[in-house]
View 1 (cartoon, rainbow, N blue to C red):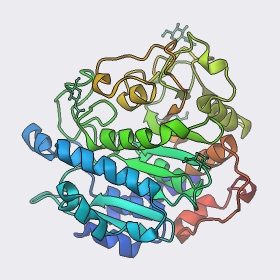
View 2 (spheres, rainbow, N blue to C red):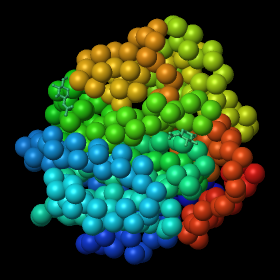
View 3 (cartoon, helix red, strand yellow):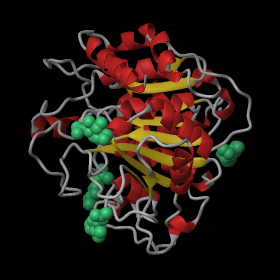
View 4 (cartoon, rainbow, N blue to C red):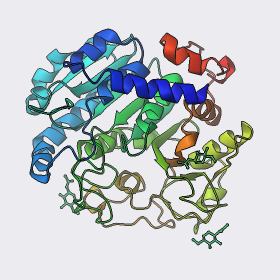
Length: 376
Ligand SMILES: *[C@@H]1O[C@H](CO)[C@@H](O)[C@H](O)[C@H]1NC(C)=O
Ligand SMILES: *[C@@H]1O[C@H](CO)[C@@H](O)[C@H](O)[C@H]1NC(C)=O
Ligand SMILES: *[C@@H]1O[C@H](CO)[C@@H](O)[C@H](O)[C@H]1NC(C)=O
Ligand SMILES: *[C@@H]1O[C@H](CO)[C@@H](O)[C@H](O)[C@H]1NC(C)=O
């Protein structure tokens, strides 16, 4: 069943590619998961851009600062009417590029509205991805999900959006370009990684939006109900002793992972409690895997590295700014299982609030029936 869900998600992505107007995604989709699959069809694909073109798509300072302000204002908004294109008149630097719309009764979606001229397949003009913020009154968990690596890490953006939706989390950011969108050029930020890699390039809008959510939320982020969760996947055998490696962005030299309240530990424990699928989730406490995400620039920021130093400053695990609020979930691609991971996140962050199951399309529903309502 899980595999057929993955296949269906793939078919959805490819079947909407012919559509010429991404705004039609809002009319044709009834839940966040299918909305995501529709919008993601317009993300920049591998090797689709030259360096000069990519550079011209990057946000400039005014665009970054207004988009960040907009995200924070949306987090604070209590009146649903704030989420409308009229609000963007107060954000002139980005008004020509983005739109914001209510979706279902509980979400504000902020996304680009223009397509890039002359591209086939069609892609968004700026490659900025999108943000979805759930109403505070609808949110059951103050969790912030993101996926920086569309295409190269397969369905991780489908996972981030599905798990955000199913667990009624607070925010979702998905990057709008494959990290391989510009072939063969390295990032001036983290030289080991490609220039369009949103987790390793501080000039991307993904990084700015991740910073906005962090700046708004971090002072009120307690391990009991809050975390910044980034979804990743790797090739089989990338780690020699685990297929799922969950990191808070630093090693265990300071004993951080001995804390059972740490979000990374709670998530690993919840996954393992669900029973065997031929993989055990591990952290730096019980694995020698070196994929700690210590060069992940959102992780660095969330671990207290100054915004201007994220390209160079490696957070020491002993640094007292490391909160453990960042969670980097990295797994072999065959474990990209929405149902199991939604269940895991719901267990790791239990909620006693009212139970309302989100509306899902028939296609997605087939993959979700196994979720036990008690975990919502
Ligand atoms: C990215 O980091 C460099 C320093 O490594 C800094 O000079 C630059 O201003 C940063 N850019 C953005 C958009 O934050
Ligand atoms: C802090 O977080 C808690 C739990 O999510 C929430 O109930 C509360 O309203 C938040 N406080 C502020 C000031 O945002
Ligand atoms: C990765 O490992 C899984 C589980 O052993 C296997 O089913 C899958 O085919 C492997 N994938 C690749 C690309 O080898
Ligand atoms: C995995 O690799 C590390 C070095 O990266 C090594 O210390 C360790 O013994 C290896 N573990 C296994 C199970 O092969």
